[in-house]
Length: 114
Length: 112
Image 1: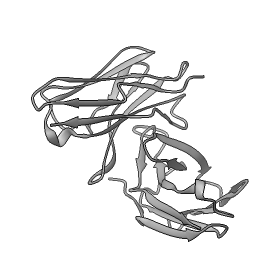
Image 2 (image 1 turned 45 degrees about the vertical axis):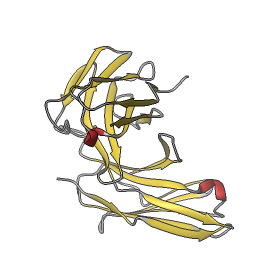
Image 3 (image 1 turned 135 degrees about the horizontal axis):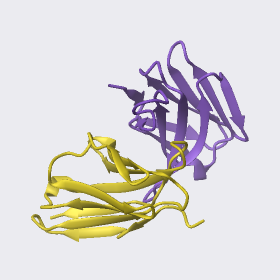
Image 4 (image 1 turned 90 degrees about the vertical axis):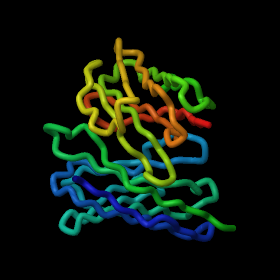
């Protein structure tokens, strides 16, 4: 089945850029998502990218997609303490069949230090 | 919009008891998803519905788990009998036409 992998931890200093990486196996992925989970809360959609795009920028967030290598990254510019959370990568498969399911990665715990 | 609503937020029960978790999706959303999150297994999709009909329940762990969606604004996930290994955070999410999913705050279940 589909697999999505992320590194478990990332620590950065406040004001630096954070880059969270994700790899996936499903070559039929149509959309790829980044969700943020703060302690004790549900997942909040941050941004998403369609599979025919290479890059998407939204304020401090930049998503890069390398479809050939099946690699997705999320860059957070000027990281703040409020960005400390778990970040999940998720992919959505083909639009037919089970395409409405998302496969989530394990999540990357981002810790922002002063 | 109130977002996805789940109840209760916390549930503590004893092994063998029946547990019912509830979810109200966002109005107008036609997909509803139930997930379970644990430290060991991460976020797992249990089941999802489209227009109140179960589409894929392959993630439901075993027969002790059942889910229903009697109408477009309500769904339940039931565990009977509950076991300690069912302890987890259970999330409900909804989406419109299979697009981005909006998650509820979750129900933290502890089975003693």
